[in-house]
Image (cartoon, rainbow, N blue to C red):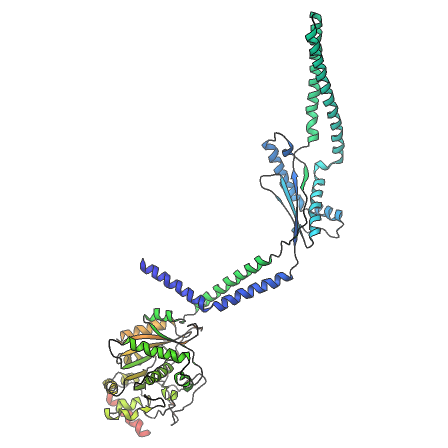
Length: 572
């Protein structure tokens, strides 16, 4: 359970790192989307909407309306809702207002208010006054199209109203006559008079009942039926446009731009398998990241000795922090030899080793930097030294001749042992007993020995040498080193029983991040153009010397190597 929570926290932290790295792109996309939406809406015409309301049927005018009355009225309202957007209604409204065009059905909407007899008619137009007039006129045209608008029916209703008024008077008169007969009946004493008054009362009541029946039959005719439309509420002049909604459009566009930017960067990160942050390197290599070093200025190797060229720069301080980290990592066991390794080539391993050696020397220690990359050596180029003799000569020679091949640099307390001539099988030399003896002999003369090693995933030299030194630093390149390469490099060094102290994130940006696509190893070949005698050689724009292909030749015994070495020295 706890492991699942920890994994989830790691995943969330990775998302946070990604967003922090690309925050500028996310912000830029959101701002661009919002500005574009704002400018676009400013050019759009303003649309106004006016609404008038009509009522269908007269159920509300009845004292005791039935459910059937409401049902019929609502069904009729649905029918009238469909009629509103039809051409006969729209054409009649346009003709009545004197418009030269018929309003588009797309600009006219009608809706019935749920569970009511009300029908709302809305018109959208670029002119608020025209929208109001059209809404009202369409409602009037709909009323004129209903059966209640028949002129003949109005005349009939007027006649019926007159008849009803007359019947009301006759009913009232009949009632008064019945009351008079009742009074006379009460005053009569003879049987004949009483019988006569009773007969008169019955005749009057029959007469009044006839009037009342006729009145009840005529009354619904003037009250109207369910199929009747009346104006309930006229449209008012709209004061604010309904479209475009500037604030909502801008906010929505910003949200869309934000989502698109996040989707894009997560898709890029998904395709990009290179390491980007110190946290990622630490998680993959399972060691602490001792330094995140920014991209160094300059294209050529000597220009990247930042600790000499600009000792007060943040990059120089990062190398000093790396020196402190190395010292603290070896508190229990004094660290006298340190190998700087990387999984692949061109990850800044050699420059890191050179600058680290400089800061160790600046601390007052006697430091020896050994170029143990016997396939593509570069330290003689970094410090502008001769490479006519070096490590291969020291391994082949005796203990007394080791210091003959060591060259002092312009930095106080810093010496360099260049690679020397390239042997046919570097792994044999680096893994030989003579190499172990030489390291122990040099430890007596120097406080710290820094090895610049070959890439561990390209050749086995680095893993072999890693088991011979006191500690190893793994250099990774932000934006270039593959995540899987970091894991494999750390795993390979541990299998060789190397003491992996920590990692370095090289060429990191100011935010401890960078950007790059992919990772790939290229052919790691021997170099035939070691030096021109002055240790300068030719360096291309990327800081790498030109190279010629060569193949590793097997050397079965130490005597074979000695024979090759003697022939090489004789040739020189």
